Image (cartoon, rainbow, N blue to C red):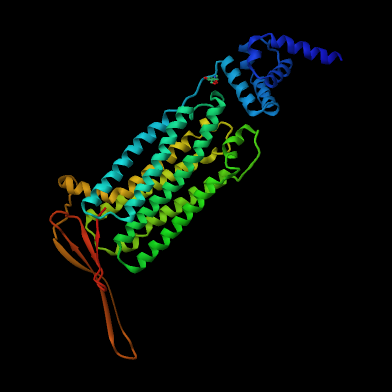
Length: 417
Ligand SMILES: *[C@@H]1O[C@H](CO)[C@@H](O)[C@H](O)[C@H]1NC(C)=O
């Protein structure tokens, strides 16, 4: 009886303090019981805020006895009373998005202009444009998220905005998955057009199939990663019912497979290109191409390392900023890279003095790529097959050379990278 009365009296006295009225009652109760263990007076904030043991026991108690929205509100109020530093990283993602997005739009524009002026619009271009559309939608969503407070501590954001940020994060993931898959397919379609050999075509077609299946599977999976779907952006309140699969394991799996596919796509042309006797300049161009491929892989790996907190953090609106801008950067850099052959070809046409070829000493040269000969011991018939590559210097497109397959005299233009 007596103990109960004491508690009521203490609660009443605490309630007369104005700050105690601004925090949810569950958190006020936590603070009150923690104060009995502390030497601090209930009005002495300087003392309360400095007492880390008191603050951490209040936090533990609050998380256990309040719902999420009340716990966040309590954290906000104590933060305000203690004069906690307000952290704000909302600018980073929009800046990264705007800068890399601008270059991606320019690269795709140049690609379309270049192939169009040569009346050569292909499936690969359609694919590149689709990838750009996905990344632009993703980028626009990042702007909305930042406007809602993505980049600030979660307890400083109003609950309806938190919900919108979580929903938009899910949408950006869908477009990110689609964009990355489309850029891989764009590069493979380009190979398909450029390398005439049958074995190479087969490798490319199979790789396109693998990339398409990978992209479709992961995009569908992220759309339905929670059931019901809206549970994905309402579950953080702890007040709704539903089920989700482990998002962290899932994004790790996606990023790892994506990196493996990127390295594979980078390696596909190596065997063919190593057999070509290229001039120094073309070798440098190839190195640049691989350098960029390696750059994408590095960006992917940095993004992967930013995952350590993703999906497991209690403060996602602040902790996931790095994952967000590395994802945006990775997507836009991938779009830029798959347009580089066209960009280079256009620059060489428009500004030949800066980007023109310098190793055009041999106007036309023919090299034997491989020579297979053999005699059938039974019939005595000798067979000899020679694959010939003709490098043809053209007056206006000095660095363009042709791959000529000696067997079926198939011409394919290969625009040097
Ligand atoms: C508390 O939340 C409001 C918005 O709801 C925010 O403006 C303010 O900065 C927050 N204060 C602290 C200390 O977190």
